[in-house]
Length: 393
Ligand code: ADP
Ligand code: MG
Image 1 (cartoon, rainbow, N blue to C red):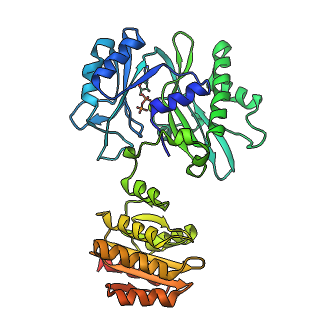
Image 2 (image 1 turned 180 degrees about the vertical axis):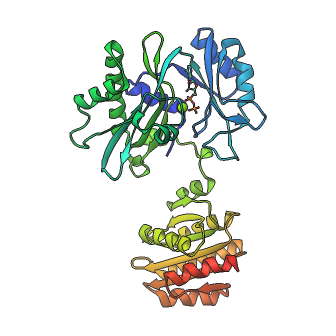
Image 3 (image 1 turned 90 degrees about the horizontal axis):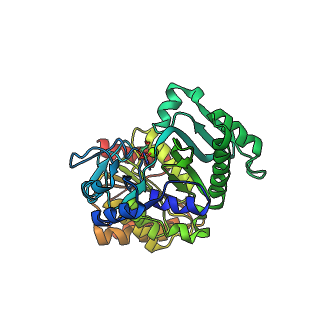
C-alpha cells in the first residue's frame, strides 16, 4: 500500500523526522487559506498523487509541472490549474493521474539535494539504507551513470542501526558539524519509523540541506507491507483506493490475491507458486499474462465468481486460463464459481481450463453440464500452450 506525501508528513511528525510544514487542500480556496496560515511570502504547491516525478510532469491541460514554488498570493491560481486536472509523469504512464488534492508547504532555500531511502533487500534478508549526494533526480539514472555515488549500508535486522553505520553514511554524504548531528538523528528516527510501521520502502528524494543550516525531508514516498497492515489500522486509514488499480481494489474487497499486469491472458490459479509457474509458462509459449491471481486453498464459490468477473471486466483480456491443482481446493467449487460468473456476465472470450485433484470428476461434470464453450487441457504446459494459441490463431 502507498500513501500520499501529506499523509507521510503526519508519520514524519510522529517520528520526529523533520520536514517543512505543510497543509492539504481540496480546493483552490482552501489552498489560498493554507498559504495565509503558513505565513511567509513564498510557498510550494504540490500535486498529491501516488507517483513521483511530479516536478517534471505535465498536465493534460498543458500546464507544466506538478510542483510549483510561488508567491503566497498566487497559490489559488496555481492550485486551480492542478486540482481536477490530469498529471502525467514518468511514473504514471501516459494515462496520467487525476489530482484531487494539493499540499501547500513552507518553501525552503535549498543548498543541496540528497537521496535517502530505506528498503528491504530480499537477497540479503535485511533492510538496506541507500543514500546519495545526487538527490532530487532519478536515482536509477545516477545508479547507471555514476554508481560510485550511491552508498549502501545493510542493517542487521535484530541488532538494529548501529552508530558506526550512521557515521559511515554521514561522512559519505559529507555532512559535518551540526548538520551531521541533525542527519544522524533524522536517520535514526526514519529507521525506527521504517521498522515500527512495517514499511517495505521509505524514499526521501530529495533530503535537503537548507541555506540556514537545517536538514529536512522534502519529499516522501512510502510503501507498506500489505501483510502487516492488520497491525496498523491508523495507516490503513490513509488508503486512497482512487489511486489504486480498480481491478486490485475490487479483488481486495473479496480477499483475493490479485495483481494487475499488462498482458492479455488472464489467469485464475490456486496457490501462489502455481500462479507464478502458470505465468512463466504463458510467457514461455510467447504470451503475456494479464494478471497474477491466487484464489488460495479455501476460496468460496462467491470468491471464485468475483475473481472471474474482475478478469472479465478487464478489456485487455483476450483469453482466460484457469489452472487448478486441487489439494485443499475443491475443483467443484471452482467449477461452480466459474459457471455462476459466466451466467451473470457471459463468456465473450475463450476459456481454457485445466482441473486436477480434489473432487475433479464433479468439477468437470459441472463444467460439461453448464454447456459453456470451454477448451480443456490435460496439464499445465498444454493449458498454457492452448491459451496462447487461441489468441494468436
Ligand atoms: P517529485 O519527486 O514528485 O518531482 P518533489 O517533492 O521531489 O516531487 O519536488 C520536486 C522538486 O521541487 C524538489 O526536488 C525540490 O527541488 C523542489 N521542492 C519540493 N518541495 C519544496 C519545498 N518545500 N521548498 C522548496 N523546494 C521544494
Ligand atoms: Mg521527489
